[in-house]
Structure formats: C-alpha cells, structure tokens
Length: 165
Image (cartoon, rainbow, N blue to C red; front, side, top):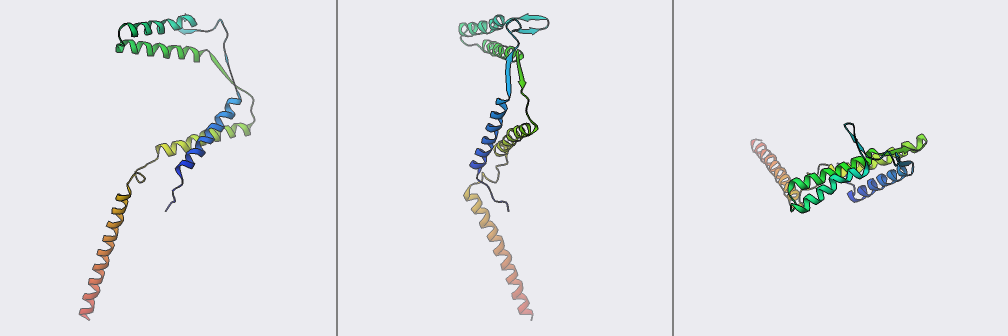
C-alpha cells in the first residue's frame, strides 16, 4: 500500500520549483520592441498604427456605455482589447541570452518539473480521497461482516465434519 504524502508540502515544492525556474529564465531573457516607426498592426495589407489600434476600443467603450451594456457592444469591446493585445505581442521581440547547457537543463527541469507536480496535485483522481470517514468506516464494517460470515460457514462445516466422525 502506498503511503500518502502531505499534499500541502507537494504543492509548495512544485510552486517553489516553478517560481525558481521562471525566475532564472526571466534573468536570461531580453525583451524589446521593433522601434517607433514599426509599431502597429498589419492585417491583409492594411497597416494600422498604434493610435489607430485604440480606435475600435474607444468606439466599443462609447457604444457599451451609450447602449446600456448590450451584449454586442461588450463583445465588440472585448474583441478590441484582444486586438490591442495582439498588436503589442506582434511587435515584441524576445531574445534568450547565451546560456550553458547546465543552465538550460536546470531551467527546464525546474519549470516543467514544478508544473508537473502542480498538475498532478490539481488534476489527480480524488475519488478515494474525497470519500468521507463514515463511508470508509462502513466499507470496513462490511468487510468485517463478510469475514465473520466466512468464518461462521467454516465453523459450520467443521461441526458437520465432527458429527460425521
């Protein structure tokens, strides 16, 4: 039978590994933008600068407050926020600095090992753990009753054998 470990300790260990790995990774990454004139969003040959990316958001906010928060205005505003985030992400360059193989393996083990520990705890089968003490006691009592019934039948068979002898 496998002994159950302290889940809180496992959670803290996994979280510590994940945070340490992400911290080391963040120290090795440089983030920059493309430059002042290359900001914006290109879609189907149409280039939209940074200021124009904000126009759908402004229209959405005005529409949302003017119409009393209709569903269509909320969807339009949400889509414009996603559009702004996409424009920022598309104009961001991420460079990983030169790292040794040891550092790279350490980062990967810490990040994915910690994420794996957290995922195991969060998504594990809690069927057995979620059962109440009363249910476990009733199962134990049922097993004891079955054992008693088997012992009784064995005793009855022994009595029958004694009578035949």
